[in-house]
Image 1 (tube, rainbow, N blue to C red):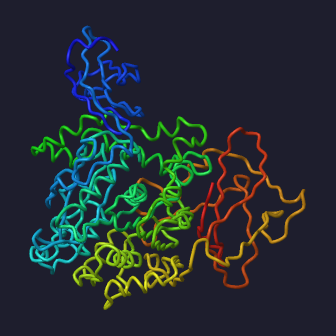
Image 2: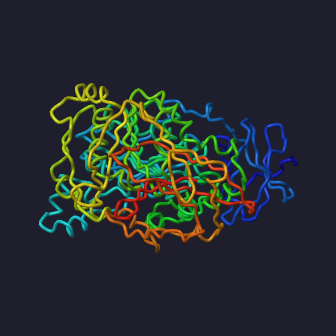
Image 3: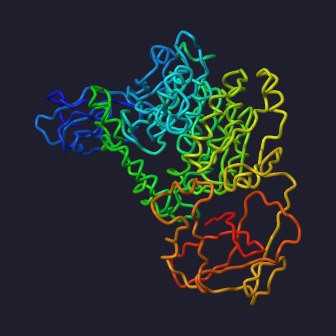
Length: 614
């Protein structure tokens, strides 16, 4: 390190294996040194004068020096910590005072995360059972209201009067799970991850600091006087569902329960690159969208907040150009890289979760994939783990047949009180849900009404842990997310399930006898363009959530695929669980992405999608 002869005009902050620089001139060359003056890293500030050094070894006396100047401006020394050594004392969380409305939560490295807080009533009438939703979407957006929607759907209701009883109608959380929790009488704290919305710092998909931030959020919220029992739960579907698994694996002492919906078993092998094939559909579009919204003021509401005088939100945009491009990062690895991918394996993290868990997801999820059930046997440390699986789409986690159990679970393990769903909720919730599903969906009866929490927990825990909803969509309204029947099983995989094998036979047959060596082969021509075919044409992907989506299932032309069909079933057969296809392939092309689709062919020739894999 050059002899420091001038104080730096930029700011430097140490963190957990990171060092953040702000306030420098753009395109400034900086060098990072440890306490002994040894060079650790270098880089150039971005257009906002910021630079984030990642993967920095822990240590004291770390400094940043401007390398291109003479004399060389040098920062004061900062400390870089490890995840374990960085955990603050309880007093750090107790010192933060959170009030209803919009504000910020300070994490262990000084980064502030934007948070919107919704209470079901005045602070003085608390404490209230409290849940947290945490993601890189826009959970802390404080600019929403359901008042217009309610007036449009139910014009006979006086919304001004309604808002006195149901405050969330006029002051509405941004994300559906938070809105539903508020509707069920829970206090809600909705928090944006670092590098998104009005939160400070830079974004990287579930890096260690994101998990530690989640730990800090849980502990800070739990320390508030208006939180019942000094413990909180977590809610969310998809991204904020997956975040629960990551945060819970850090074992915050005051986390009481998690309720992840529509999640996956493995970030890389389940969603990002199933079968080693990069998911250029959902995974690419999702990562690009999140990265775009994490740019400075990428979420329009954050600009509105800043322009209204929120200087914290404005200052928190400084590090945004240091966000990590998850797509570029993923595509830089040709094969599975354990050092990068293993920490993102939710199946591995599940064993570190030590709180009651309610998890629900679809076998045919068009976004997070169909492998979710593979995580069910991994929750070895959770005192209670309950699973609901069903055929259906990503959004079906919000179907009433799931939500009623979800609400009861939170009542048992967080609120410690069984409360009936407000009749007003039952009145207008089906209308609101019809905006998602294209049809009204009624709420089923609650199963634990009239019991106290102890009685309900005893009865609930005596039930088998795996609930399968069969023929979801075959209720009174065709396509609506209502199952025709359901069953419960003690564990996953379901005990006593009989594995059945079919063999690929000659002439497109699928039978129970293995073919001879020379009669089971089939040829087809590989055409990469066929991988771009979609069953829901157009840009409106939300049509997948409708009761009867406008699917366009076109059969492959002869020679474009290998197709095998079994004999008609002679008796009713129930299939549940995972499948695998063992194929021997010879090809003249170096890389051929292969997928297998399983479908049911009805007697009238109509075909129904069952499952697919790569």
